[in-house]
Length: 218
Image (cartoon, rainbow, N blue to C red; front, side, top):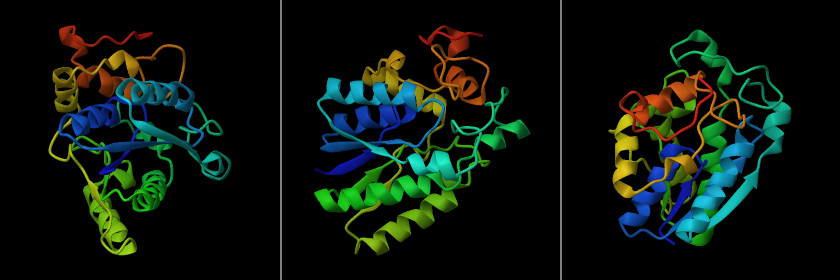
């Protein structure tokens, strides 16, 4: 096994999986159920994608985050706000140190199965309101994982120079069925179309040009 990929079931990590397989990597996918309002929508899609692509897949329960952490993204939090990411209310969706926790677990898993790299779909369009998505955090986390595994494992960021629209365009070229991915933070039966995550998905998949196959409430 070459790589462990953190697969949420969202469009970025799904495209990252398709890209890794297209370049010949042997990939194991790791997903996390941490109590987000949309976990019950995206995790089945992550599972279905791995079954389709014949990729080994594990789902790790992190239920303590929903119990102990404060965020409106979690089931224990308040309502997910509407509006774009640059709206101040979107800060309420920060889950404290979420990516740090997930990367730490994934690093241990990667070292255990002999995989030399972690793949994560962080990209240049990730918003600064999320501290554990910033380039400075990614660099520090990569260094910590290298140190903590005697340089057996490193993080790779295949989309570091791409924004979300670039990722959507790449996914179409790779044959990704985006109806098999989930983005909406509210976790309803249909994407709401009004939260920051849906706003970004519309941009990424060129909704205004008619390329987005997603059904939205608004």
